[in-house]
Image 1 (cartoon, helix red, strand yellow):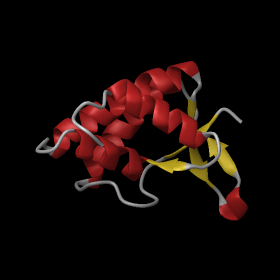
Image 2 (spheres, rainbow, N blue to C red):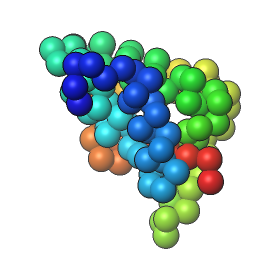
Image 3 (cartoon, rainbow, N blue to C red):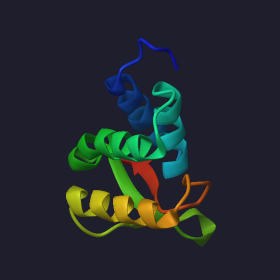
Length: 109
């Protein structure tokens, strides 16, 4: 990602990618980490959740659990409740999210 890339560019990429693939929180955080080199993990967490907010609110992304066989179970609650849960679970994790940690996202399908 370039220095000239904006958070809106990142959000558009997430929404586009989520139309055909599931996205893990770890992947989104890595995008933010790359976009903001030198950011602390707290800053990465806050930036990631902030960038997710309009996508969850609009329905461009949906927070889900991945189930066996490739099915999805949507997270309950409003976008704000989901973001609060992600924030709490990320903080409780005590490390960077990795593959399969906390939440996955799918696009409007």
